[in-house]
Image 1 (cartoon, rainbow, N blue to C red):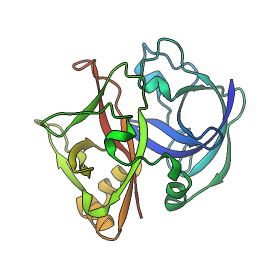
Image 2: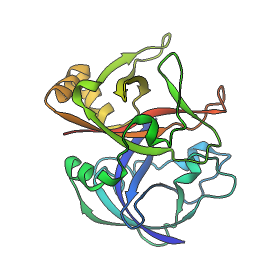
Image 3: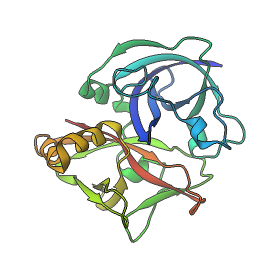
Length: 236
């Protein structure tokens, strides 16, 4: 077991459950804390419920959380296993302090990469569709960050068939355009309350944007691909 002090940077929504991640200021790396009992065979077991994650909870963006955790079990797949840790809730987690969004972005500046591709150690495969993925099993990072001019991000909605519209973003990095899903809790909350107009106003009022970059877990239909996504957005 090891002690971590993570600055919570990523809170993403999956139905009523949350995936969280943060920058460990003790080791200078990203960590994805997962609940005790998390196992590779049950995807839902790897997410936190609303009692632990989301606004006002222990795992809220900007909170600095002290916790005890163990390394990922041997059957956890890479690249996610690079950051996966299993929390020992027998030792209570503690919120040491809370940073505002801009303070959080400044505190984790050491984890910002020069491009979206570099955030995943150069392993990102970009398709003609502008969607991109890291191959399952890659021994690299599944979490990172970039900062770009606000003119290099656009939010939009996409609908598949009769499904409800999904929030997505087009991000330009190092001359390449990426089409990304946006599971980031705060961005989706803003979208639900103020629509695309609210997000576009936030973009226009900022000079730069700090983007939390993450990878989805592989889908059953595409078990060898972990698609890139926007885990969080901070307007600077």
